[in-house]
Image 1 (cartoon, rainbow, N blue to C red):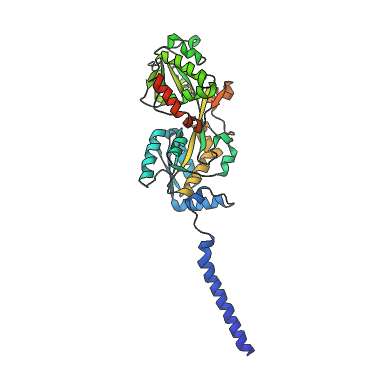
Image 2: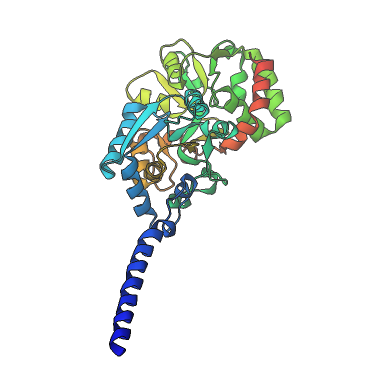
Length: 369
C-alpha cells in the first residue's frame, strides 16, 4: 500500500505540474494583456521605454504631418529618429496648418488615418474642436513650463514663434521705422502696410494679441484708427513669401510676421529687418496625436524624441526657437527673443487664440476686409 500511495502521489504531482504549466501558458496573455491604443499613449509604467520600443519595432513605422521646413527640420528629425531607433522608420508630409487639418480630417472620416502625429502653429485647438486628436502623456512634458502643455494632455509645445513687423531697409529710413503700434497710424504708411489673411498666425493673432493685452475698449479704438491705413490683405503664400515681397520692395512694411525670418535673410545680405513691438505676441507650435492612428508605440517614441534635448537641439539648428527651456536658440536669432531684447511678451495660448478667433475674425471682416 505505501508503494501504491507513493506512485499515486508522484502521478498527482506530475499531473499538477503539467496542469500548472499549461495553465501558466494559457493565462499568461490575460496577465500581460495587449494594451489598447489609449493605454499605450498614456502608459506610465517603469518599463515604458521597453514597452514602446518593442511595440514600435513591430509596427515598423510612424508618419509625421508637420509645418516645419523640410530640409532644415523634418529631414534632420527623421534622420536622428531613424538612427536612434533602427527598424522604426519615420516618414513625413509637410503642409501648412490648414492643409494638415484638412488632410487629417479626411482620413479620420474615411477611417483610414495615415498621419499618426501632427504639428504646426495654431494647429492644436483647431484639431481639438474638430475632434481629430486624443490625449497622450510623456514624462518629458514635466521638463516644460505648464503653459507649454495642455492640461487635458491633448498637445505639447514643440517650438515657439515671436512676431514682429518686417521692413524694407531700402524703402524705410532708419529714423522712420515704426517702434510701436501707434507709429503704424502715421499717415505716411497709408496703403503701405501688408498683413497675412487666411491663417491663424496672421490677422487673427495680430488682433487677438492687442485685445488680450489692452482690453476690448482700447483695442477697438485702435483698430478703428488702423482701418484708415488701408492695409493690404496678403492672401497668397506663406509668412516667408510675404517677407520676400518686402525684400523685393513691393511692400515697405509687413505686419505680424515671424520675427526671425527677416533676420535670417538680412544675415545673407537681403535688404530687410525686424522690429519688435510692445507687446510682442508669442505663440507655440503644438504637437498632437491623431485619433485613429495606426502606430501608437512608434508615435510615442517620436513624441519623446521631439521633446527631448536631442530633438530640441535639431529645432535650434533648423533656426527655430526650441520650446524646451534648457535648449537655447541660435545666437543670431536672440535679438528677436523678447526676454533677450527687453520687450514685453504676450503669450497667446492655443486656447485663447481659438477662444478669441470668432471675435477677431469679425473685427477683421467689419473693418479691414
